[in-house]
Image (cartoon, rainbow, N blue to C red; front, side, top):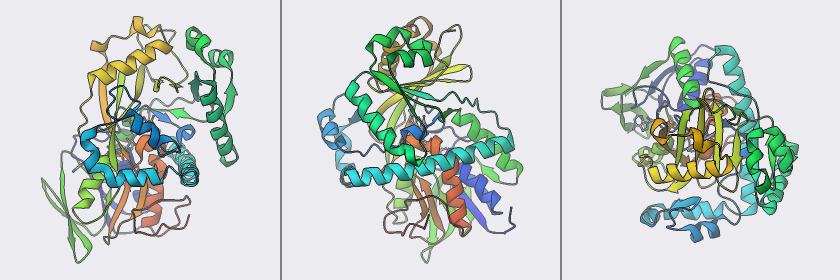
Length: 427
Ligand SMILES: Cc1cc2nc3c(=O)[nH]c(=O)nc-3n(C[C@H](O)[C@H](O)[C@H](O)COP(=O)(O)OP(=O)(O)OC[C@H]3O[C@@H](n4cnc5c(N)ncnc54)[C@H](O)[C@@H]3O)c2cc1C
């Protein structure tokens, strides 16, 4: 660890902000973290699917997607629901999104995400080994199952293209899926097969982030919880202070790591960060007496949910709704993912009681390219680490490391995407 006196204020104590704080401390910066919640990781980093998945690095901006989304417009049960009401507010983002669905951009973005995801997995493992944080880590891989043979073939081709770049996977037939996870035995006749990703891991993002925040505090970082950032004060095109509802903090360096809320805040200082909230839901309940519950995390491609054992809990997550900044969970969408999970795991019906489960929703911060924005902004002293979409837990540690490396004047070691108009650093 180097010694330096510079002070950095990190805005947001989600998985990304806290990982950034950790690596800034590594470089010897003095760090203050601000969050409006009473503790770390209480918004999108609370109830996500829990999977650290290099296997899921494909952006949602992919060839063929714009046509599918148009067909789903306004349909309540659509896998990706865009509400008509938001269209006037997202047209510019949507045009960028469509441009990123071109095959060449899709493959560049996928590869960049894979590199960051693998960098992040190594970083997470190093932090976990060093700090001993208990976050219900499980290393049983992830099994993706398919009912449509064409979808399975396409997924196998996609994974095959990433294999030379470090993605490990194995293709399984239906019997192979049930052998890998016996809880799939009931649904085996409906399966075309699956892909097993042995290197994917599971862990509780909230527990890890809170543990890491404590570790950062023990190394001298100041955490200001229950504090809402109201303004980034800019003087002569430079960051001068952060104004909050509890007073101002003078600083000439700040990192915006506010997930979906990064875009509206940066907009106030003239920086366009193309990030839109895409709402998802999860249901968490105690495994209890469900002794035959899956041990291997399963992602069901045709029913579009993930069922993941996390410690002594089961979490089912899914759903994507381009709405606005409201993270209230919809009971209807929760019931829909529970019903889908019960189709694949009929035993679930005997063990799942909605009144004893926690229904949650979070806003995935999604960029048009499906890659996070990590680096400088045009405002001197203002940096960004946000826009991790469906991959924020997977990429948090690597992203925090990359941004802290950049701020310390070092090469980040992975390809990064910065805000429009700012040149990307060399990888
Ligand atoms: C249903 C669902 C399932 C998911 N599953 C996975 C998965 O399996 N694997 C994976 O890798 N990713 C998954 N994700 C994505 C992942 O959860 C997010 O990408 C990640 O949590 C984003 O982290 P963040 O730190 O950028 O944002 P956040 O966790 O939202 O943190 C931002 C912080 O900023 C604070 N904040 C905002 N505005 C202000 C303000 N004005 N003042 C002060 N504080 C403020 C908030 O309180 C919050 O703590 C999933 C997401 C959802 C919704």
